[in-house]
Image 1 (spheres, rainbow, N blue to C red):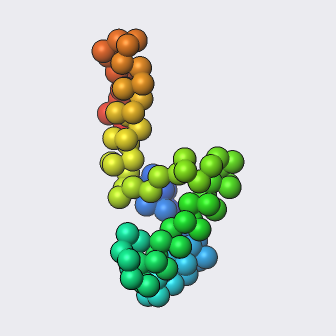
Image 2 (tube, rainbow, N blue to C red):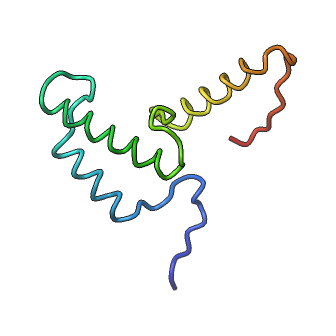
Length: 99
């Protein structure tokens, strides 16, 4: 019997190309992109290339792409930003228990 996976909202299988790129970066360009040494510089180049690729796919400027530590940080940035932008409209936010 073959397995059918229905939990993609939790975790989705990574495509082979993405897994290969992650392995390359983790083994060759693993530096902190904020560091001043060569490995850090290469990591920064990887990050800039990724930012440009994502921006191109979304038809936005690279400066509009932000990388975060995960879903919770991303959600907080989006929600707090939206709340601040609409602050003059009222003090209520309607939400659900679904992330």
